[in-house]
Amino acid sequence: MTVRQDVHSAGIPVLCQSCEARHHGVCGALDPEQLVGLAKTSSKHTVEPGVELIGDAETVDSYSNVLSGVVKLTKSLSDGRQQIVGLQFAPDFLGRPFKVESAINAEAATAVSLCSFPKAAIERMMKESPELEHRLFKQTLNELDDARDWMVTLGRKSASEKVASFLLMIARNIDPTLDPAAQSTSFDLPLTRADIADFLGLTIETVSRQLTRLRSDSVIRIENNRHVVVDSLDRLQRRSGA
Amino acid sequence: MTVRQDVHSAGIPVLCQSCEARHHGVCGALDPEQLVGLAKTSSKHTVEPGVELIGDAETVDSYSNVLSGVVKLTKSLSDGRQQIVGLQFAPDFLGRPFKVESAINAEAATAVSLCSFPKAAIERMMKESPELEHRLFKQTLNELDDARDWMVTLGRKSASEKVASFLLMIARNIDPTLDPAAQSTSFDLPLTRADIADFLGLTIETVSRQLTRLRSDSVIRIENNRHVVVDSLDRLQRRSGA
DNA sequence: CAACCGCCTTGATCTCGGTCAATGCCCATC
DNA sequence: GATGGGCATTGACCGAGATCAAGGCGGTTG
Image 1: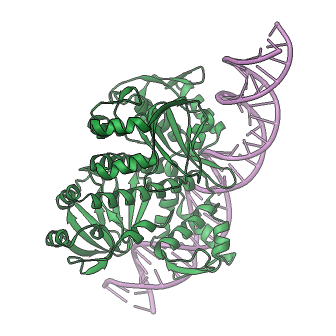
Image 2: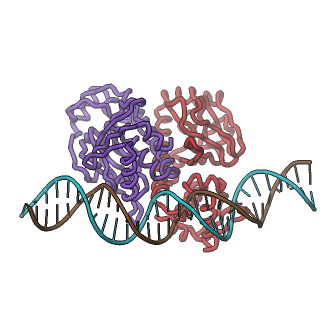
Image 3: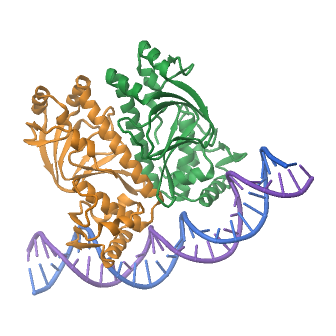
């Protein structure tokens, strides 16, 4: 999974009045006048882990910027088997343009704060401002690249490679400034073991066993089941199947 | 995988002079004047199965419309394991906007005819014509939906469900007019067993065994190793894991 | 026609990861 | 401090799919 470089670098920080904070998401593409208009109809809110943001086959009538936290996108088979098909980190945009209903579920994986706009407002602005559509297009292209990278992991990697790849992906997304040459890093896991399993196409038990193995091989340490300390990014990378 | 409905329905057939044929791809978004300009720099050509169209990490300097045939998009791990991450059917657009190099390989799976344009020409037109960018955006959104659907298949379905899902996806893409209530259909497989395995994250042997099972259960017949006759779309669907 | 090659099928065996079940750990509540 | 619930870990066993190996089939090349 690639770090969303160009979203970060292209975004000129803009004060989105409704979010009450500078950020780099959709708002970065709007001129001050548009921003004021948007602020009237947008609202910032915070949700707890587990809250469903977009329901399967439900009508989607709003779009959001993710300000902090992690949102998981899931799909399920009729018998309950589930697969996480994407994770959205700040400052990603949440919502599927040009479609009234979504075939996927979005759920807060951690505590999440969002800035939401009515669907109609965004779509109107997209007509007026090619720059906004351009920016959403670029995010979508990045999501497509990420999804395709992940397909390789799902289809062709072993369980231990999957878990190593997952940890690396999380590390890179939580700290986008992470030096590729760095030897160690640490972060809080935004997902439970069950979520990780659904992301990797594995079972909880297998995920647990692989984490235990990484731990006993001194590649990582885990504190309080959530905080991961990677002692050797190098060895983690070598286990990820390149 | 969803059928690319809106690309089909939104496209007003336009005579792209260089392709010497009416089709619905990128050209459908251009006005006659732009088309004439494009025709000067574009060229139609046909390639044999196995020809590499876009090399991994190679500089991409042209974009193409797929006029007929099937292009497979692949990614590989350093040790040679391969995964097909997408298939492009006519009238899809081939090429990754806004990036000089591609992390992906594109290879003709069948005989393919394409209409190619220099990268610069398309990017210039995209700046002038929001409609063109809009259309490419929509195709990208569809590809993202397809990729995510496929992630569920890769991560959570059994071998027999994978093979059934694959046959259904091919049937729907080769004949987009296929009635959902139809009881039978037939088509030529655009992929070899090895390709199917790389698409499904399986081995050749497993694919072969699953096809044999579908055959002995009279769900399908296979003639000359390529032509598939589906006798019961119903039962195939029930085996695809919904 | 024989020899060969690419692709596919089938069989025997092995192994990785799933399944089932027990236990541990953390924390909230009384 | 006891009780209970939600996650996570660990162990024993099993099975789906991989691996290894041996043909089969169709086309084409000499």
